[in-house]
Amino acid sequence: MPLVEFHSVVCLLGTFPALAGVDLQVEPRDIVLLEGPNGAGKTTLLRLIAGLIPPHSGEAQVFGLDLFKDRRSARRRLALVGHESYCYDDLTVMENLQFTFKASGVTGMEINSVLERTGLDGLAGVRHAHLSAGQRRRLALANAMVRNPELLLLDEPHAGLDEEGRACLHEIIASAPSEGRTVVLASHELELSRQLANREVRVESGTIVKSGRGEL
Image 1: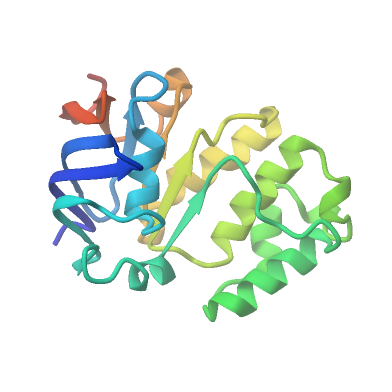
Image 2: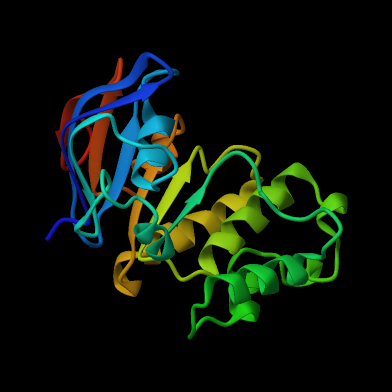
């Protein structure tokens, strides 16, 4: 069964149709690249999948759950990394991860291993307020990973990352299928993202105009 299955989905932001009849399927262990111009609807699509905004019409399911009836239950099984870290300034890197870990109720994840994978092991005792922009982006990714999501949603994940941070990001994305994880990422860094994705979806004016395996 597809993890994400949308048919003719419309999503309104106010009265504006940010998504205007989207058809999308995401299979387990896919790495899907969403590409398209600014304002095309990529971020809205990610937020809709994450259950942060409601669909207006059509058919929308994530993990087999109907987003019209229940868009919150799926959140326990996914994580969205956007432009903000949503971490607490007065907590250290480790304390932020511990908070997320306890709040999510997941088991089987090692916080120290997540710190190492994201290159934050040397910054565990540093407060969020004292991190650079790139380090905050890494912490946002680490915060998502401690939840052990089945579906990882990434919005412009390369932004603000240095070479080391991008290497950490790429390792996490490339390893996702073997770890039973599915990834959907929206990115303008096509040269980098296409190395990782096994499927590409082009979004324009709130609709999907092309979808296929490999580069479109």
